[in-house]
Image 1 (cartoon, one colour):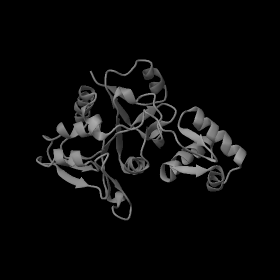
Image 2 (image 1 turned 30 degrees about the horizontal axis):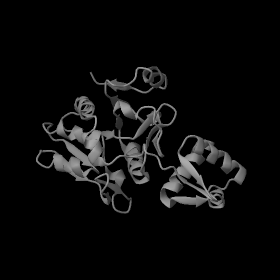
Image 3 (image 1 turned 180 degrees about the vertical axis):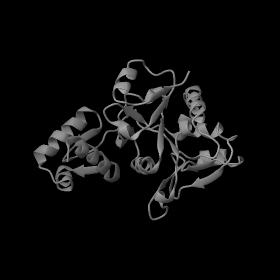
Length: 253
């Protein structure tokens, strides 16, 4: 296992167990304590974990995931710009996935006029927004995350592989050239990974504030993403690096 894979596994374990001892992590990852300490030092320097007596825990960051209600009203114009641009990629008769998240929610407002549209979603706000439209709605089954107003799915409840998703519109909390897209919540990340795997075309919808951030849980590298749609507030310094990495960036007017 490469260092980045081990570090991501450490973050996933801490997301579930909250606090772990060094010996527990060493046994779980099947690595020496010396190797583990190097990984822990790296994650500590990045501000992603905190060392406590005899073990480690996820860092308490004031830059963590804000509530859904807060995100619904922040950077609203930028998110609306992204949503309008995304709607141009969606045609009559398409089967699409709209993710949970405040940016993806805005897409629902711009696809109501599409004919014979099928929308698969795990977002309660998206489903409610499209309830009075002609779109065929499919909610994935699973556990309700109240803070995100979303459903995080489990294979025994919902068979993902029966879906035929032509275009998926995925949200994230961070996006970098090196690590791709990431999120704060493990269950949301797992759901997004599954949707990315089975979708024919993947769009990441991320306002410009998400660029340059690498948060708790890795979702997918850039080579799994077809198009990134963001707003015109994106710092120009990011553009050459993303183009060099082969990412297709669509920046709204």
